[in-house]
Length: 62
Image (tube, rainbow, N blue to C red):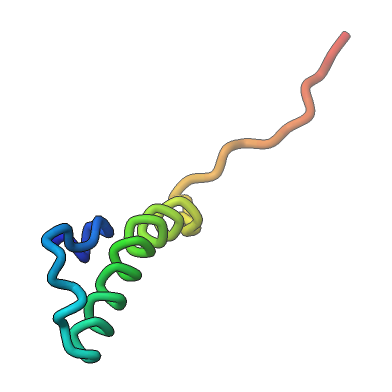
């Protein structure tokens, strides 16, 4: 959970991991860093289809 939260391990056992364990840790930290940014940008940039159309007309002045 700490790798996914991008805070890493603080117990000092990272050096004892195997190479595959370190790669998994790196991947989880990267996904944890990238995940929230990607989710927010995907929700903000998606196009919404309008089910209505506002009337457009030039106002008559005078």
